[in-house]
Length: 133
Image (cartoon, rainbow, N blue to C red; front, side):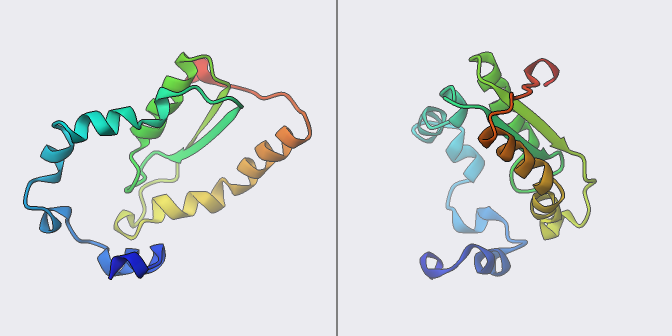
């Protein structure tokens, strides 16, 4: 039963499976029509301006979370006047079916990300890059 499965085990159990098997209707059709389309649009994180500075790092070839979704969120927040620093991890697509481009950037960009957080605690100014996104 999935509700008692951890994320890692779920990834192992359900890797390489297509979603269509679990639905009687095509999932793309479901989310592109109401009521799901309106519900998902209302919950979009880019709708609300963050109250503090934001740092986003994302791999361009992430197989689970599309790069354009993270970029669009950053663009939406920038348009609302938020303090956003967006970093693109350019690790090339390597064994993408094994989720490498989703997991490895956490380690590759970890030092940069932790330095950004430490700078906030130390009162250093942010370096938003909205103009370059």
